[in-house]
Every structure is written in structure tokens, then in C-alpha cells.
Length: 377
Image (cartoon, rainbow, N blue to C red; front, side, top):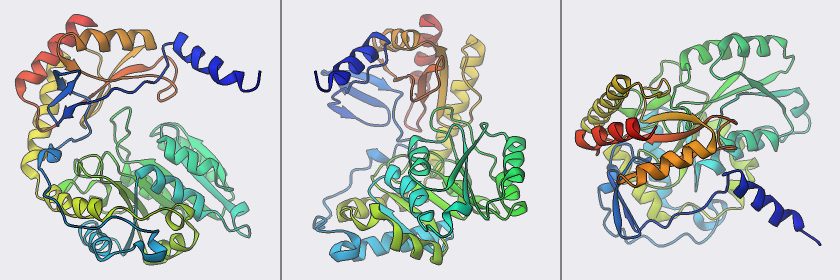
């Protein structure tokens, strides 16, 4: 029968404890979540600074009516782009509705010139986000992977390449492992090999560096920076920041930008408001770091195997998908909401509980989590 593979594929995933399902959330903030009328302590939020708890009054903005290249580029979009450039120190910016679109758009759009693409190569960390991998695979440039955060391996790959146009791509904070990219070493390698550096700062922006500026706080800013508004900013959307000529080129070649309805003016206004809150959120960043250190210290005392990370993402690797799902359900019975991350999101045999710490958590929340982890693992 036609399309039998669909039912078969779903059943295979179910049998392997890999089937993805959705949970309807009734209410949530950076500390608590309500599901099926029951409240849990929320350790699965990306609202790292708790800024999502700041209600945004109705903006009075109209909705999006077209793409940005028709009539969709409004004053609020320009204000947001200008403010982002001012804060992060770039010439120009482009707004997108999601980080996935922004990432994949850059990699597809930069390498669409048939006269030069054969002389181009993309060098990606093996743990990069799916949006970066997909963008590179849809590009005609040569796609070269290097071992996670392994600068010697990257150097060897660069030295072996004869490409004229080399782009090194990494995440600032890796979404599943929580560790950070060595930005200064990446910058040194890109200079030595006449390459460009692109950083996806989705999980770094707002959290890492002075004023939460992430990779933009580095002495050597990436040539192309992608930030998202749906993590520490607790809004929605994304932006690409770069030199004016790079943004001009993307404006001509990005199909995602050209043929998508512009970011909602309401979301643009929300992002602008949240950006001001974010850069002035030093107290929240301090509280966040204190909570991260408390979690790590308590886990060490209980011998809980947490990956090396100083960011809000604190993974507890359990190996099999079955182990991760069982731990998730056991924690749920203790009023703790955590997400089991399984393949293909992470490599085989590295299924994990992805703990995310926020500034809104209280010490008793973290103590309860660690005690519960110790009991169920």
C-alpha cells in the first residue's frame, strides 16, 4: 500500500522510546509550570533570566501584512534593528521570525553564486544545531565537520582546504551540552586562514559576557552573529548582525527573508522592550549564576553525573532513551518538570535530562531537584 512507510516509521520510533509527543501547557513561567491542572517546578524553560514574567501591555501595533521587501518593513522593525546594532556593535541587522530561519538562511544565501560556490567551504562543529546543519546541506558549498570544540582538528581541516571562501560556524553556547565555544581561538584560526566566523548565540545572548552580550562581548566579534529573542529575551524572533555589505547581500539572496511575512510588529515591539530589560538585568544574571553554582555544588556532593557546563543548560546524561524517560516520569511524580532529550536530537547512547536553571528558581527548588535526582538515578 502507498505510504506504508509512514505508519511503520512511527511505530519504530514508539518501540524504541523515541516517539516525540506534545504536552499542552496551561500556564508557565521561569519557575513553575501547570499541566493537567497540576503545578510543577519548571526546570525545562529557556527563560533564563525570568524576563518572561514581565507582562507586556497591549502595544496597539497592527499585524504583519506582507514580506519586508513589499510593505512589511515598518518603523518598529527599523528601531529594533538599530538598537540591536547599537548594543552589539554591528553595522546592520536583518530580522527573522525564528532562529531556525535565520541560521539556515545565512548558510544557503551566502553560497548561492554558481561562479564562486565551488571555491567555498563551510566548517561546522559536529554538535551544531539542526538549523545550521540543514542550512549547510542545502548550500552548494563543501560541508566539512570538525570534532566538538577541537581546535586542532579544525586547524587541520582548514590547512587541508584549498577553498577561497571559508566560513567557520559554531554555537556560542551549545544547546544540548551547555558548554561554550572558544571564541578567541576560533577568531585566531579564522584570521590565520583568511576565513569568516559565524556564531549562533541563541543560548549565550543575555546570559554570557558583560551585560549578557554573549560573543559580541569578545574583543574579536564574529563576522556574522545570529541571536534569537525566544530564550533569555523571552520574546520571539531572531536577528542576523554583520557588516553592511554582508547584510545587503543577504537581503538580495535570502529566500526566507524575501518570501516570508515580516516579523509581527507586536513581536518586534516586545523584543525591543525585552532588549532594554535584558541589558539592564545584571541582578538577574548574578542570581542565575548563583543558582547554577548551587546546582553544580549540590550535584557534586551527591555524585550526580552532570556534564561540564557553567551555563543555564546542565545536562545529566543517562545513556538509553528508556533510562531518560523513566527518570523524567519519576521526577514528575515529585512535582519536577524536566524533559528527556533523546536521539536523534543527541547522539545515540547519550539520552539525557536537560536541566535548565533560571534566575527565578529559589534555593529550595534546586535542593529539591538535586535530592530527587539522587533518589531516582
